[in-house]
Image (cartoon, rainbow, N blue to C red; front, top):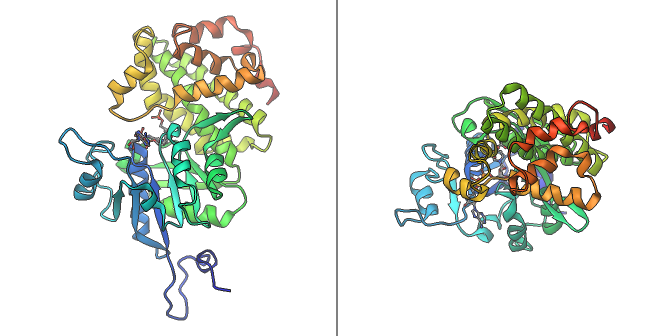
Length: 382
Ligand SMILES: NC(=O)C1=CN([C@@H]2O[C@H](COP(=O)(O)OP(=O)(O)OC[C@H]3O[C@@H](n4cnc5c(N)ncnc54)[C@H](O)[C@@H]3O)[C@@H](O)[C@H]2O)C=CC1
Ligand SMILES: O=C(CO)COP(=O)(O)O
């Protein structure tokens, strides 16, 4: 039987006695927004150093025309910079932007998914039958879809639609900080295949980006997804100038709801996952410096009179919030299961974001609803 790329590559970087041409993993990044561009830069710096990977990293770009009339893909390939989503940062000459998604993925052995979550169903539909059957995937996407049966994590959507293995990478990772090589950590969540997880760790790790593997895909992914809803609550508190103690209270309550929800959905979720970078660290950084927090602050300052869509378009120039749609998706799950009382913070964030409650409800609710703050509510179960 011919050796597969998989078993030929397990002894990564170890010298071989015979001179032989060993196939190398080809990596494609599906997505080229703010984090997608930084992820491409990280990976591209490593593929040049690690002999088991092809130097070239393909990056699928959702094509758009810039105000200059030029195509974004062409500008990225000419300047080696994503001038719209990550201006001022060189991606590495081995990053090649490609506007054709089918072409970008067809030869890849490793696929990195990093688009806003709302586009993933459409992307997966386009990719059915277009990827190598033994390709390995990883999702950096913080979000979920809601189906009749309940929430569907994006890694599950990818695995189910494309019939491939999918890990996740989440963490306290504000992209603009990693772009300028400030130290941070991240967590890779994997299901069974530790060797594949280690390969992802090697592909992403640098001196300033430390990655640890954890055998808990759902826990890691739910942390990354749910903290965006808590970040909106933190933004409301900032917009109302409530101060640090209130914000810390919101983060604490939010973390408990994250943990309770995750464990109710998946009994396999581990307590220890919440102490990894994907858990409490991501919650903190997003509540301090993320886009969800920033736009929610503006929303509250405007008394909820300007919609999130309007503020997002004005403040983020094409970048996308994940928290507002995640709050809506979460609300659907809570409604279907009759869980609103167990998750007052998640419920209130959605009610505020759609204008059913004023931003000030984020604290009023906590004062008047016993199980929101002082008395142990849903969170007592976990
Ligand atoms: N930016 C950050 O600091 C971090 C982001 N993430 C997560 O990574 C994921 C991707 O985020 P970013 O790369 O920051 O994206 P972004 O917020 O910069 O989103 C814009 C991207 O969406 C693309 N897009 C617009 N319309 C589209 C369509 N119809 N179909 C497909 N793509 C379309 C744009 O071309 C652009 O690449 C999100 O789930 C986010 O939560 C995770 C960690 C850090
Ligand atoms: O996920 C993030 C940091 O880890 C970024 O969060 P925002 O999308 O709120 O900027």
